[in-house]
Length: 339
Ligand code: ATP
Ligand code: MG
Image 1 (cartoon, rainbow, N blue to C red):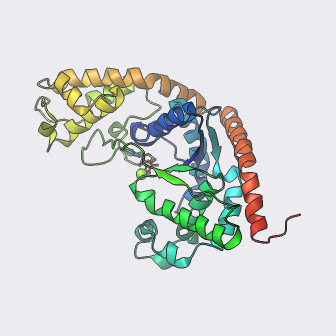
Image 2 (cartoon, rainbow, N blue to C red; image 1 turned 180 degrees about the vertical axis):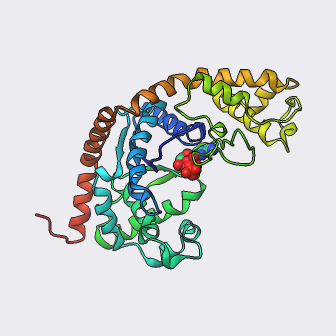
Image 3 (cartoon, rainbow, N blue to C red; image 1 turned 45 degrees about the vertical axis):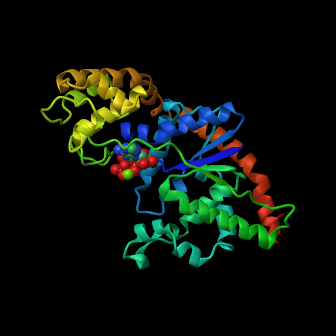
């Protein structure tokens, strides 16, 4: 059993990234390694260049993301944590799979249609072939399972189609080159909204720093941001239906529930009838308690370039070793002569 999952590297991570993405990785790592499975987690920096990007930000963001992942609980010993670029087999296998993938298949990808929009002629070729790189990312390791959200289901189907056609065309039934990976649907991720506007997602690109809790914020900053978070004048309702039409209140209750590992209903049965004067300090304290170990490690690690690069070098070496046999078999199956 082997899981492979990638995330685009970004810097300036915040509570939304933690609750919406990173925390699921940590839970998956703990669950799968406990039953003898393996988790490969990589920073999808090659994917990041399919859209306009700033090179210096990508470089810094890649290290920052490693720091955040480790600070949040990804254990680089138990999991294989690496940067895609440092394992050239990803790019190599993508090229090999380009011979198998069909234009018609890629043309049907809704993410391509959405991201290219009306300007298909101006979109990068990388954006078009992105799903083939994703197929390479998982097929390279004989992944048995791949966590996929709703928006990635189609890409996993494509990876299976590519694997199947490659196996049919170039391998015998008894000795297929690629494993067809199964999807696993991760638990529904929390969607965290801005502290200043319950209708906008918490995001690193929001110009207001008060809109988000950064993973670098200290206890004072967290308490202050929660105290100043936008709310309405009503007390909290006792039941979930009472949060309808109150996006800011719903967001704070949602954050409390996610951080405490409680249901929203349980949070409301505890705090229903109380005003924000009571709820906000409780939420602030909970956030400080749960986040301080993470934010402290993150602040230390993100500036420790040597430690981060060592983690990446070790992860890349282990990933390369796992990838090598499959890559060689793919080259050989295609009749490509290697020295
Ligand atoms: P940008 O504003 O540049 O889009 P961002 O803050 O939205 O940045 P991303 O780099 O787009 O962050 O997202 C990284 C990961 O974090 C993705 O898996 C994304 O779904 C998740 N994520 C980002 N913001 C939130 C949020 N507010 N709530 C839940 N998950 C989030
Ligand atoms: Mg985003």
